[in-house]
Image: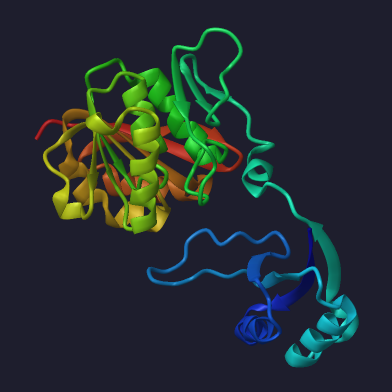
Length: 293
């Protein structure tokens, strides 16, 4: 079985009209992606970020006439027919397609993150099974990798850990796998909490993980606090994350570009001795220790 796919590059303001047109023409799905190289790093709260140039892909049943559909879409959105590409897409087991380039990855000395059903070659001390889900984090992004390596080096066993902005739960679960006694995970995105809970169950770690449905539900102070989010929220959250870290406890902050590290570090210095701990591909990990009151 095959499908017809129409592809067109558009500016942000034209997207609503284009999506509506695809729906009227019988599209099975519409996806949007960056048409250039301009990642949106820090949208305002409540915004749905879009790129300056967006590539729209509309999937139709294979029986649809490609030329007719392309001409109709071009007419609906006011572009030349030649601006709309036509592709044939063969049906596949899409879950496995998503996984085909995802292989066991090592972070530091002990920790491995592997797709379900795969194992690293040879002996591995700490293995976390995690499939790519809804782009919540599998260790492939430099900021996540920096955090995982920091955990591998720093978790000695018995710690109480907070993963603030948990995404897939990868950091909380990695800490548990490395020997932390318990972990709490919190995210403003409900789907992230669902993904975290499912990943904890798949790894047999649900009993040691507390999922907080709201920030108010996070209880007590922690030995280790992790926040891999964005620089703006990290600055705003400095008093709260400081309050969540016990005296003598450690904090790791990621999701910030090298040029943002100074501002974020300054926001935490009233409570922490903190500074850059690692850098990779333009991203910085800040790490620090909470001073006594």
